[in-house]
Length: 297
Image (cartoon, rainbow, N blue to C red; front, side):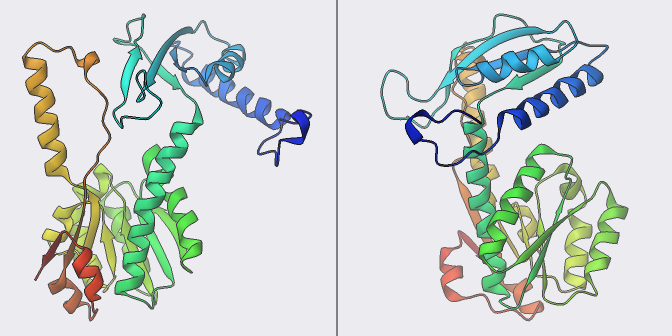
């Protein structure tokens, strides 16, 4: 923060005190407006978020309640197990409540790092399959936090690959059609389809238009590629459902859901459709085929 430099150890100030307090005031005012008829429960994830939470509560002009929880993947050791467990649960019931989670940004940084890795793989794949691509358009819904995070990660990765990346926000089939028609006049343009219920529900339209306009495209799940998409890289949904089944089994045997560890997806798969690549006049490098979990011929 501005004015705080213990022994000259601070190399750079990411955000000064005044800017931070102004942003907190904006958040407080927005929360006051959005939740005027239903004051929220603010849940602080210990320990790093406490100071921020204290400032945020003071900026909210509503009778909010506050509760605390703690999570850890370390247990009593000094090395992470990779499995996050709740070590302090909430004391206030959240049933029927509006809840706002307040947590230290280090977790967000980890999420963005993971997003950046996935986005870089998508962009690298497009460049390897279609080296002439200089611009990539991401089809997404920017109002969705996860999609916005993907876009930020993608833009960070794109610059190092010599690609210009822009996002096009879509909410229905008509907007998807308009967005893809606009790409038909572009040269050296690729497409990334981000995971969202809107893109999933309209995947047949997206696949049809990508083929029609000969767009090298990367998709988030295998079922896109199985249906004729060029390539997908994303979470292995079968593995995810299989792991969920073990949780259901444990719950049915009497284990409380709160006692089960929170696990992030751990298995990702790359699928390439060579038939689609041939139709688009693209050669998939052999090394990329060897990296793929599945090649559809």
